Image (cartoon, rainbow, N blue to C red; front, side, top):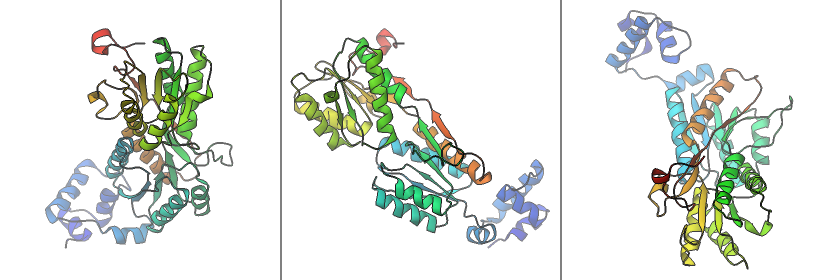
Length: 347
């Protein structure tokens, strides 16, 4: 097996120069860098990650704790995390906390015991155990998608956080439906305790207020961020004496449950009830009708979370920050509008 010394001899440089090229620890002249890379390729040299970690106390690995990896939105986030990690020369260890606070703390401990350099975590609705563990062991971590109210000593956030806008896009869905003449607009919200749920409820209520519509607590139900829960929640809305004429769903999994409940009642979208959803997904454009949705930048969120974590590793003492990325309104036909290709996209 080729050694770093073999690479240095082949490239005509010092072992230190080879180390700087492979680890990115110091700038190297382009022609020298290329000579080292050519030697690595010719000799089939591979880095001894274990030996390097013993010297540097770094494993160049990142732990990712995200629930519902089967959810298309979190799959996009995973792709963004993986691409950014690999680009930076980091490997990825993945665990699913199953949105359970106790399991969440355990999987984070497991990742920590694997000596990851830092973690990217989508926290549960009750992250107290998670926060306590990260703080006690001083683990570099970035929260993604879901924010945590954990103030630091400077009054800002205790941990770095990366997420999408939630309130304003939800308000946009509500005002769009109100502009189409709907006066009873229901919201199938996610799991209580999640920042995404509370922010989208805030957006729902502000959208109603902006449209001059009164808030009716009976029109807000929780689907617990899952298909089955959303199906039951939709049943409760349809059982009202005066059911809603339009619905907004809080995520893509709940959209499936809502559509299942509407179908069971023989209701068509948008003929009998209009529908808009938070979270776009690959086959949303294939539904009939095509789903009007808010598209979150899942891959960008994942990639940004990794970059923020790497910045944290490079500057451990810098103030934590919250990064929000914009979401996009994708106008299709489930809201009751003609196809945008025929009529144009609304402002």
